[in-house]
Length: 291
Image (cartoon, rainbow, N blue to C red; front, side, top):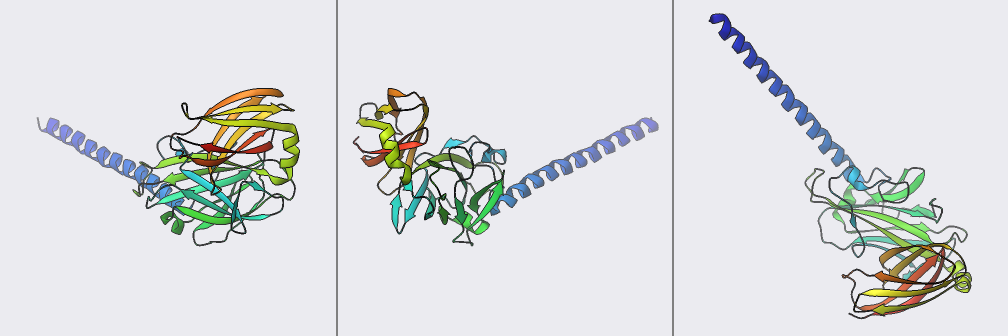
């Protein structure tokens, strides 16, 4: 009987030791996850914008990626004036902003040409809150630790020296819940397309369009007459120069074609510039949206 008690006691002690060891392992994993997350409060590790070849922020944060349309904004200004196209070899101030009053946030942005290679160069003008990083051979801008208290960030971008067609700014934002963990954050990605002024006149000769707004369906009705085939995009820019909506048209065939684009319900009534591009040639029309 004494031997049985001793045997049972040894089993209980072994179980207790395994329980402590298991708890230590779980705590180690939790601490690693927390520290891993805390490290990236000082900026994205890079390659998380959702651009071609990039991953997304949910590789480190739980949840699913949401559309940043109407929430993420990218504004280019030159001499204090917002622009919707760039001139080659020109420096612009870029403002990235989030439509929120959330206390803790982050972002990563990359600018790519139609061949998905880097377009232009960055220059940091606020080293306290922003920095450049490189991932996949592509330079980007992200927040620093002090910048997580902001909802907008500014820096400079110098456009390519020659006309490379439309430049797409791929932006990912993180609206955090300040928990120092990976749960509960909201990740949004968006694309903001800016055409080249040098190519507008040439594109207009190759691309014609008529655009109307249909209130009953909250849609843009776009009639295109293109001289070539290519990928099509639609980008809406408000009168403050902010890109508020982007949609892919898919492959557009040469000749005439009709497209209906359903807009976000969050878009307010007002005047917008509609940029339509086919094979990186863009034409712009002014449209009044009345709801």
